[in-house]
Image (cartoon, rainbow, N blue to C red; front, side, top):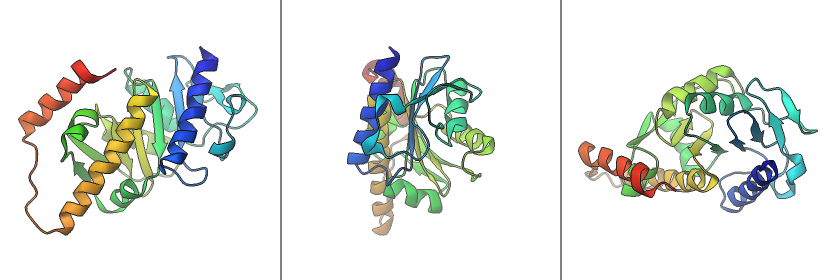
Amino acid sequence: MEKEYKNTIVKACRKMLNEDLVKGTWGNVSITDGKKIFITPSGYPYDKMKEEDIVVIDYKGNILEGLKAPSSEWKLHVAIYKARKDVKFILHTHPIYASIASVTMEVIPSLIEDSAMICGPEIKVAKYADPGSWELAENAVKALGNNSAVILRNHGLVNVGESFNEAFVSAKVTEKNIQVYLEALKLNREIFYIPEKNMKELREKYLKFYRQ
């Protein structure tokens, strides 16, 4: 199973690089088995990533396996896993529209149905804190709540899920929803929002029937 976890992370790194969700070595990926965290190493090129490069740590940040240092954002991953027992996979990226939102917005409503279902009723922007700090991790957990997406102020995007596929789809849908919202604001026209009642029903329907 550990080999499978590492292989999934390597594939995830390639995919988020190819999908333009990250630039350079920014961003990070992890999987947990409930006791250990398999996480990308710090500052290592995604196109060169191999299974043996993945670092295994415990929930205190101690290295259990691997020759490289774990991602500098390991505290963020630990905090989310501790707070959300349903989360098994975390994807931290820096796509352009989410980055724009990170410097201009407090919250982004889910304007489109797939965002309401997959991401949650709204996508909040966590308060700023130094990268790699416990404060950043705590701020992210608070803003994330029960949703699958949170934006880090002046930083980037975090998406979570029960699997890589769920977290990856959440990242793509989050980015699309933010783009739709920002472009809609430019038109200076009335924006039609999904009614709150329907928003909750869409999220519940996804969690009950579509989450796989």
